[in-house]
Length: 76
Picture 1: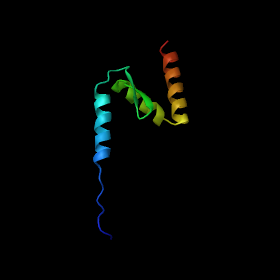
Picture 2: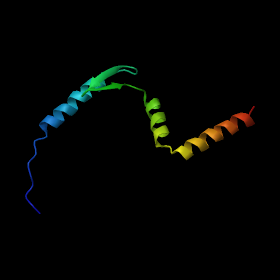
Picture 3: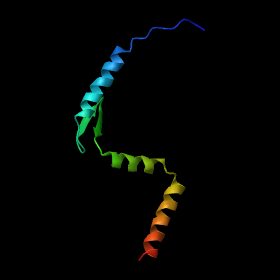
């Protein structure tokens, strides 16, 4: 194994803190431009819903939609 290399991470940490300051002041619906990308603050509930939808495969989405349809018709 080679000798450990010293790496200066102070600029990375400073950038991380800058982004944290921007984001911590945002309220749901606020937008900001961070490193050239527009971002929008959303609620935790919305984040969880979006994350679940992205994680579902096409087959999972179809099965979920079909199950919802069947349940709504059965309860009608």
